[in-house]
Image (tube, rainbow, N blue to C red; front, side, top):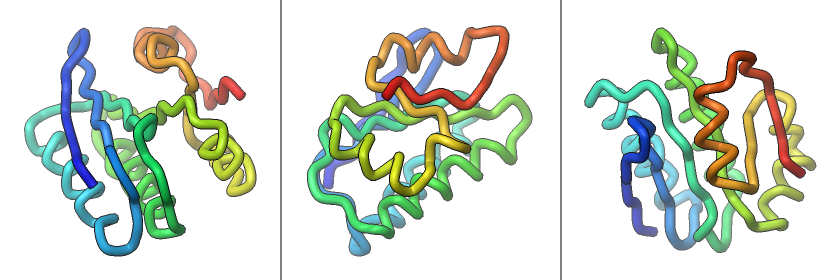
Length: 122
């Protein structure tokens, strides 16, 4: 797994590339924690280049979401264009508590919207 962080309009995009599984789920959470320690409050978690995932990767997403909920004005959203991810998120009912987007621009603009509601674009 590879992890990259980019900034766009003051929002961090935390991208995971490769397979996400038990052997590297903690790296996902650590990368998000580092962003918080660096003073970041808004994050897009990109799974657009993720292949295989197991349940520990899903747990890491929940952990990242909780980390950002704990900080004042903190928010995290998920971005992926991969239908298989959206299927898994629907099956796990993630759409009921996570903002999940299949369009990066929509994910980015969600930080600027007046109403912040749980939203899935699929």
